[in-house]
Amino acid sequence: MEPSFDTWTSIFLLAAAMGLFLFIALITTRIKKNYPIAFLILAFSLILFQYVLYWTRYENVIPYFKLIPAICYFSSGPLLYLYFLNLFSKKPSFNYYFHFFPAALALIPNLILWFKYLGLTTMKIPLISITQSYWLIAIHMCIYAALILVLMIKTKALDSEYNKVRFNWSKVLVSLYIVFILSYISYYILVNFPFFNSEWDYMISGMMSLSIYAIGYFIIKQPSVFDGELHANLFLPIKNKNETLENSLLIEFYENIVKHMETKKPYRDNELRLVHLADQLGFSTHLLSQIINNKSGKNFNHFVNEYRLQEAEDLLVSSKHAQVKSIYFDVGFNNKATFYKAFKMKHHCTPLEFKKKLQVK
Image 1: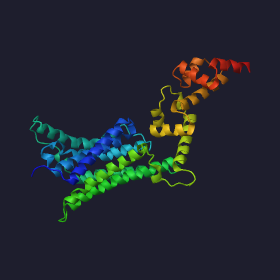
Image 2: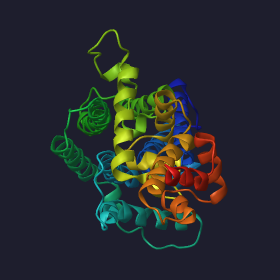
Image 3: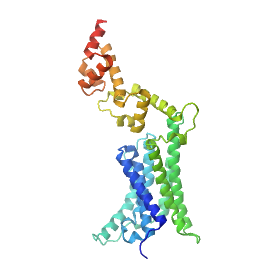
Image 4: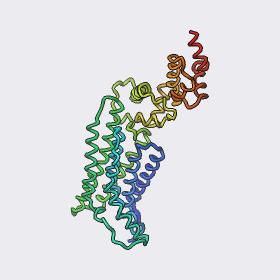
């Protein structure tokens, strides 16, 4: 039979393309903690694309993806677990790459297969059984689902709105992954029964598509979703009906930012940027910028410079022999011109004039 598409395979091909789009969108944000999710979506998309090639019989025309699903399946658990470690501020161990060892083994027969199709080798494909060990793949994914659930239970903290949102987002994501695993397992059970037909064959791909589009929905609906701040109206009840949940969350987040600025003093870093502070706080740059703008009435630079100016004032007051040059650098300003401009805008005088006034008093 000639290769051909029908309605379902066309939909699934579109879903695979959507996954690729989401992968590119996440990677280009350059938020490193989101990279595991980006590659997880890419893995789903590659699996789905191979299934489309199989259903449409284009697999004979484009044979290079035949063994790809095994790599993606073995990578999905470690990728999702890595995302959760970042989400809950748990630093991965230095040897975390060993989690991808099964995926690396599955890559070997893929490489040999590609070389054979390119006419570069005639050797027998090694480790082919790994790519066909469907129950081993299922067990592997179940182990990582269990590890994620254990991590969630150990780090469960509902003492703040932020932690509640983060925990509920975690439940959504791990639930989607568990549904995907159950669909995968059910497919290989049902295929042995006489009532099994092509519609069942589409079920596992439907779950992949659900995962891709669900994640895509939250990206579009709330850019901060992958830092754990889901679209709040979906996941948190409003305690005070007179106060919007969004405002309640922003107030709490802003208090956390102020506490961080006062205790950790990140503004002393001369190279501090919005993305750095966002990483420290576990927010997205979009959310952090929104909170600072709404609650302080200042942009990021003005907000940070307020703390730098306050510490500079304290040093001018407390230290009679402090040099202005050392002060502006110590409190986080990069150069004298920026420091003087900000200082004069606030006090209508230079730091030296300010210090002289204090000495006169």
